Structure formats: C-alpha cells, structure tokens
Image (tube, rainbow, N blue to C red; front, side, top):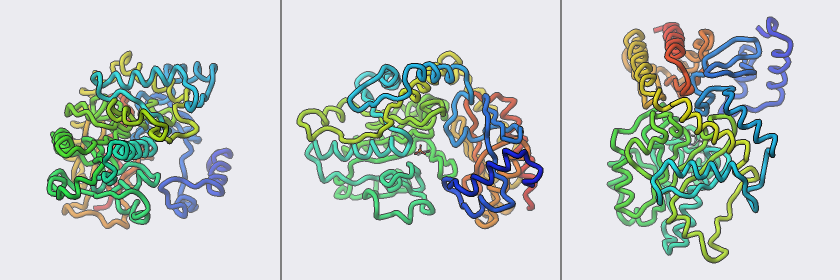
Length: 435
Ligand SMILES: *Cc1c(COP(=O)(O)O)cnc(C)c1O
C-alpha cells in the first residue's frame, strides 16, 4: 500500500510513526504496517483533502470544532490582519483590542447583569479548570470554605487536565486517575441528584453538566426541560451551576448556546472548540458580576491563575470574525431546515439499515448507534464503529465513532447536498458489516 503513494506521503507517514504520539490512540495499531494514516493537507468549506489528493466531507467538524467551514475568507482575513499587527500580547499586565471586543460581544449574548465577565484561557479543559477554581475560591472568600466538592454526571466528559478529568464520568478514560483530582460525586440523573442528603449538599460548591446533550457519552441528549429543572434545583440549594458548552456552544444545538434553549443562565459558562470557528485554540469562562465581586478587595482575593497564551489576539480575531459570520451568513436562521433534513435522512438510514439501533440527534449533532440485528450490542472487540468509519472514508466521509456510535456533526455551513452525501456514505459503509 505504501508503495503506491506519493513520496512525500510515504516519508511523512514514516516520520510520524517514528516520532509522533497521537491523542487517545493505541499507538501500536497506529504504527502497524496495515494502518494508513491520513495526512490532511487542505480544507475548504466542509471538505478536507489528504496528501494523496482525495477529498472528504468533514463529518465531525474536525473533532467538534469547525463552524463555518475551513479556509473561510473572512476568518482567514481577520487572522491575517491581526498577524500584521501582532500575533501575541500578554494579557497579564496588558490588554488588547480584539480580546476586549470579544469579551463585550460574548457577554452581549446574555441579559445585562448576568454573565458579564470573561476569563480567557486556551482550550476546553482549561475553560473548565478556570470555572472549578473560580467556584472554589469564591466559596472560600464568601465564608463557605466547607463547600469544596463538585457534582458531575455519570458518563460526562469535561476535558483531560487533572481537575477537569476528575469530573469525567467515562470510566475507561478516568478510572486510572481517580483519587488524584477534586472530590466529585457522580450522579446519573436529576432524580439521583434530588435524593442526595442535605448534609452532603452543604459541602457542594457547584454542579457541572454538558447541557442538552452529553457528547462523549455516545451523543446522549438529556430529557427536555432537565436543564431548567437543574437550574431551579441549584438555586434552591445555593449551589453554582457550571455549564460546559465546549461542544454545544456556537450554534451546534440550533441555538447560539444550548442553555438558551431552556432559558437557563449558568453561574459559569465554559466555551472553547467552536469559539474561534474552530481555527485556533482559545477558550473563555464567563461568569457573573456577583462571582467577580468576591475577588475584589485585598490582594489575596485575586484570582492567581493564567496561561502564557491567555486571550491570544489571533484566536480572538478569529472568534470575532466567526461571530460576525453568524450575522452576515445568517447561520442560525439557515440551520432549522438543515437540522430537519438531517433528521429525515437519518430516519431513512435507520429504515434501510437494520443494524442502526438508534439515532440520537440534538440540533446539528447526531449519534448513530449500531447494534446486532437482535438489538444486543456488538462484542467490544469487534470494533464495529471503527470499521464503519474506516469504510466510510472510502466513500468520502471522515468521522470518528464513540464505541459503536457513529458521530455525524459536520460544520454548520454544510449544505443539504453534502448531508445527503454523508448519509449515503454511511449507508454504504454500514451495509458492509456482516450480519
Ligand atoms: C472537547 C470537550 C472538552 C475538552 O476540550 P479540549 O479543548 O479538548 O480541552 C470539554 N468538555 C466538553 C463537553 C468537550 O466536548
């Protein structure tokens, strides 16, 4: 196989095998002779090209980040313009126009006197870390030092740095590090949460949740209304609500932010992935004036936290351009028709392919769960999800499964024709699984 490739592809693969270490990857398999890693060299709109000149639809928005498509002239131009001025400014001791404007813009999505402060960091995990540390320090400074625990949801995912990882409920990722991070109680539902004893609740600083849909948990939506009920429960118990909208933010669920769908305003809102349209790493943790004020006063009240690249100007410029595109391209206005088209297409796929056990969809995010014909799960070792995605690649669709659930969440700019193409590729790929 390697023999028929271009020289540069072959050389890159060999050097990757020699020196790179990929995230969430079984490296022995990655480096095996029969595995052909794709080297992505170009993107335009919802399409990607590999080093062999083959074109694909970006079926998972480049790991859930891309919003308006790759190589968008408006975002490219904004980054280039910023680059010509300066590529980085320390937010520690200085400030700069793009970060200021972006903060103003992000707060503008929420009613006045609600979320009105933005703390920048680099990625989803650090957005969550900031929220956790802010939530703990707030309690210390408000005479409630006993509130130092968190509640998170079973099978949730909040990132891989140690603090964020201790909230994670996916055992196969986090079991190994349990006991190293924060004290976290995991609950599986609102009902379980309601059954916790008061004595325990009095030691809780905040509840953390991925609103509307859990991503890494095989794309599992929460019951409608759950988020609003959770907000009410938090208010009743004096517990902060931290929303991790790292995946759901920026139109993915059909609204700009998932929390807006249930009229909920959190105490902390974590944003990353789609913030820059998926062009650069940048994150933001939004919080209320009330939380902010607890950090004023004596020197020891300051929030001693930051990263070298906090509020990077190139990222902020990309984010401002991305938010502007929501207006000029009417991204959210165009979404409902595409969401309906996706729903109809996936219903048709399910009707045609008996191995499609369930389709779970929330806005422009879908999980297609495959099971055996009798409804039982495939044996884990058969890795059907991976097989299907490998086959889909031969039909021009790139995506990754979560176990046996195929993720389909292309950039929001994806056309209905491209959606049809993606579903046709999945149809062909699934039809290849032996029953
Ligand atoms: C991806 C993700 C994170 C982690 O973000 P990184 O940028 O990968 O650190 C956190 N929470 C949710 C819900 C995510 O989907």
